Image (cartoon, rainbow, N blue to C red):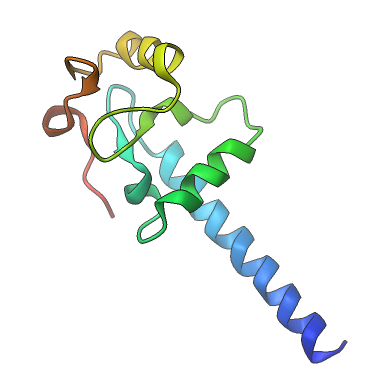
Length: 104
């Protein structure tokens, strides 16, 4: 294996490990609570969004991940799922003081 191929393999493994960490953090969010993209992927919130976008696990509670200001990208669909779990809101946003689970 060439040095370049080994480097590419290491990067894929690292990325897969990061993806798994994000998914584990999302699965660990208790019902009725939320975390931010930055909470589930510290230092790289957009990476968390990408992981969730590509995830195909129907049991993954993706709706429990919101933006840091309590807003959410999936609008009505996401809000209905959060409301069904009893997540508190302040207007159109999640009440982050009441609903946010502390980070790792």
